[in-house]
Image 1 (cartoon, helix red, strand yellow):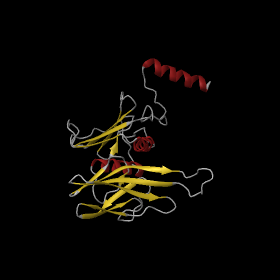
Image 2 (tube, one colour; image 1 turned 180 degrees about the vertical axis):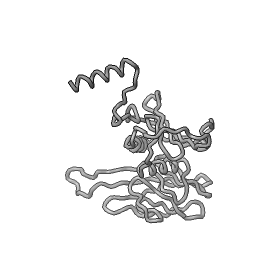
Image 3 (cartoon, helix red, strand yellow; image 1 turned 135 degrees about the vertical axis):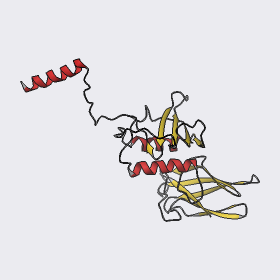
Image 4 (tube, helix red, strand yellow; image 1 turned 180 degrees about the horizontal axis):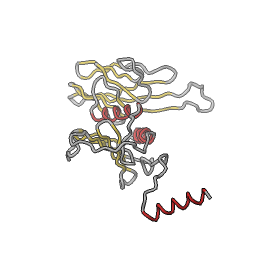
Length: 243
């Protein structure tokens, strides 16, 4: 009899147009797929701005996949609805699949991600804070900044620039060969104002990668890929340039 009355109430609510609450635990997806070939990031100084003040573009598939994984790990059901003010700083990330049709748009308002439910998370987790910081660093890279290893990301210095151009990972597990474990080579291009360039390789494997001193013009800079100048861990997704 009790079950009968519960079903009767639900039927009555549906007939009268009364909203029946959905399961609050139901999740929504950030992306329709996880296969993307290009990423464009733009930052706007206000919510109504049409022209971006900062931009970054990359076709680094590995870096794009890493960002997709990190964003997908955030809660997708925002539990806070808010109307942002006009002076809100908006950051948009457009992920393009093969063929570059139907891009996926992700937006950050100030320091919070707008979730697929169009709300925001009341409690901003450390993972979300770090992700926002990493994305902002891609838009404004500089000295003594913890930067993601994204192909094409450059740090400008007065004498030229230092650019991350990729890495080579080797398993070193060929039959009949000595077992030495996997090794990795991070490649950076150092370019001066006169057009001279040099490829710098930083190795890691059995031993941690060491800081690498490089000359740009008449000045010496250091590329860190293991520990930052403040002792923060960089390995193996980040790098830092110091003078």
